[in-house]
Length: 44
Image (cartoon, rainbow, N blue to C red):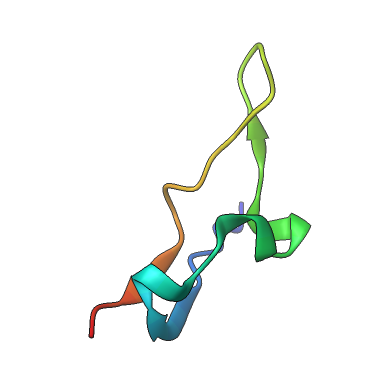
């Protein structure tokens, strides 16, 4: 199993989750909700 955990070098207030590539927006569960829990941003 491969588990991707990207770390972006931009402030968290400047990142729009909709701008993430599809590979970083896995759909989970019965309703296919997008899981943003494994994306990390720097805090400036």
